[in-house]
Amino acid sequence: MVKLVGKKKIFVAVFISGNGSNLKSLIKNFKNNPKIKISLVISNNFKAYGLIYAKKNKINYKVVKYKNKRNAENIILKLLKKNNIGIICLAGYMKILSKYFIVKFNKPILNIHPSLLPKYKGLNTHYRVIKNKEIFSGCTIHLVTPSLDSGKIIAQKKIRIKKKDNHHTLGKRILKIEHSLYWKTIKKFVSSL
Image 1 (cartoon, rainbow, N blue to C red):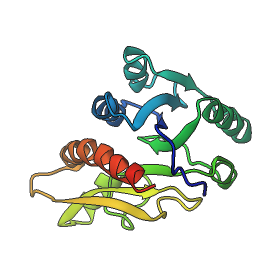
Image 2 (image 1 turned 90 degrees about the horizontal axis):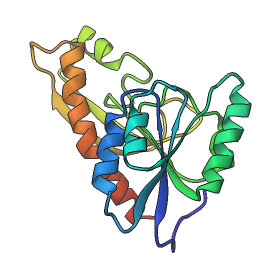
Image 3 (image 1 turned 135 degrees about the horizontal axis):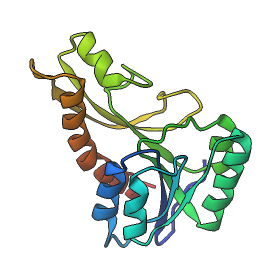
């Protein structure tokens, strides 16, 4: 993986598919940061509400449809190169990046996942956590590798599950933690490069 040492500013691409609440938090917290700039938003969904935050904040954005995965990934790779992107941050991106993409990009890709990995990889995490009567849940930030939700863990935050929690209430509580943890972890991660 390419080291990013010596760059004055690191340009970040955020990949989204839905509401973009993590994107909103990242934009807010990096607005005046001298070292980190969110300069590109990628989505696979034309209706992703998060695109509104990109527009409002005058951030370049592109919606790339996945009719052909290799073609879609090549389009994205060109956009990343054109925008001099140093880090990708996945924030609710509902597409799995291929090994080809990860190798070609050759720079850090971070993901935030709504469970305490390595437990509950994949989808429907809150539902499965409640069903299995777990005592704790939380979120994890990890490096992206070709194996789903299996890369090196960078940060985790844990919360106790309340008796009255269902998968909706638990999801809302964890999302609040994500908003705080993600930007702080990215900031720390960038300073370590």
